[in-house]
Each structure stands twice: as C-alpha cells, then as structure tokens.
Image 1 (cartoon, rainbow, N blue to C red):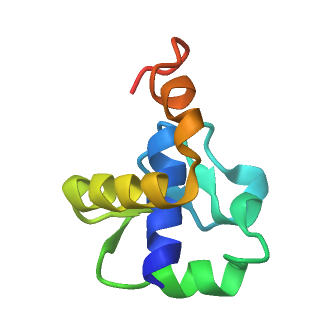
Image 2 (image 1 turned 120 degrees about the vertical axis):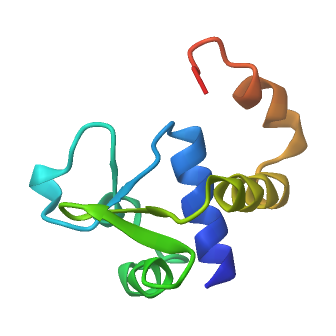
Length: 101
C-alpha cells in the first residue's frame, strides 16, 4: 500500500494534478487523474482503491480524492522518484521547460 501511495503521489506531482478521479472515467475532469487510466499490473485497480481509502487521502467532492496533506504527497512522490526513475533521467524530467510545477 505504501509503494502504491508513493506511485500515486508521483503521478499526481509529475502530472501537475492534485486530485485522483474515482468516478465514471468518461466524466473525469481534465485536470484530474483517473484511477482507471493508471491501473497496471503492479498497481492494479483493487490496490489503488485500497490505498486511496486510507487515512492519507480525503474526499474532495464529486468523485475526486486528494492527499490529506500536500507535504506528505511531496514526500511520497520524492521517495518514489528516487527509487523508480533512473538517475540519468532526473534532469530531463525536473528541468523540462514545459513543466509548470
């Protein structure tokens, strides 16, 4: 569950989104990440759903979920970034001129 929370935090942070969408995927707001679109073999939909219903997340209305604390989201994202992304890619990702966050 912790690794899944890290992964969700990284997706939200790099995707410049503060919320995850749990409702009908066809109605997912543009600035929100749908949990259905990010499910994969390692972090399947069941694990994602188990993770987002833990205390580190809170409902944000109309099917959206967000981290309860931005600091914790940033910590988890950084942890996953260091663990999962090859060091050779860090500069290209972090200093991308198209990123605003």
